[in-house]
Amino acid sequence: MQSTARMKKLTKADLQRFYNSDRAILISCIFIALVFWLLVKMSQPFPTTIDYDINYKLPNGKSFVTSPPSNVRATVTGSGWDLISSGFRNRENAIQFELSEMASQGIERNTVIDKIEQTLPSDIAIQDISTDYIFIQMEEESEKKVPIILTNNIRLSAQFQLADSIVLIPDSVILTGPFTEVAEIEFWETKPLELEEIKKSQEIRLDLKVPQNREIHLSQDKVMVQVPVEQFTEKSLFVPIQVRNGPDSLKIFPEMVKLSCVVGLSKFNMVNKSSFTLVADLKGIPLNAKKNTVPVTLLQQPDFARSINYQPKSVEFFFVETVQDSTVSN
Image (tube, rainbow, N blue to C red):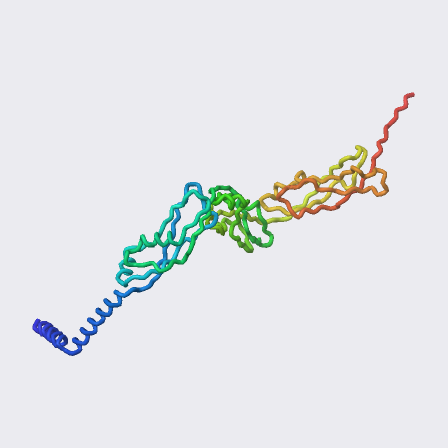
């Protein structure tokens, strides 16, 4: 307890000696000089810039043809104290203009200055602003529903294919904006979808392209892309050939061809000989021609079958005479 009391006494004594020293006097003088210098400096005029957001109040049912400036920069002068005070009072610098029903109009420089002056103390003066004239052009606002088009670069792994069509959810988007701009748009694209060496179905949330005109707005900015993928295989089968425009006594050889196609595994059992229609059409072909061959044409096939090949591509035709039996009675 006694040692602690001595420490306190020594500390107070040391402080007292410091306050009476030349060093303390010098520090006090420097501090007082700085205060006076600051007071003098802050009382002098200073130039500075202030950025203002511009808000426009459109009439009902109107839209900008092109976006007007969204901000303006003002160069102002005032004492340091006034500028600091103004900064604390105006944390959000913004001005607003109410527009009339006129399709085209403009906002003069002096009108912008008046709006800015209303936000500033009287001791702060505006020296300049970054715009001389704001041109406003409006027209009727319009809505239009257009299909969404997928922009993609999809590469599947070997032995894999699309099991069905790619699905977009939703498949369309509603555009809102100036009539002349919206009327010319027939579809809206997605941002590119890049997929490489995929072996299974994909479900991806993809962004739509951002409108170049800021006055065009989309009902949504994303779309769900479903990419169905499955492995494929080859299937072979014999398909009969149908004869058209020929007499009943006409026969063809061969009567069926071997056909091969590529299908997905999920549809392998859906493919049979009735899935294809192969025809030998004799319309316009002379039946007594020396060359008695006719081409075989594929008229019907499943939408999901691809790489279809069949052999032969033509068949021979000939006539079969029927012999009638005669009965002799005695």
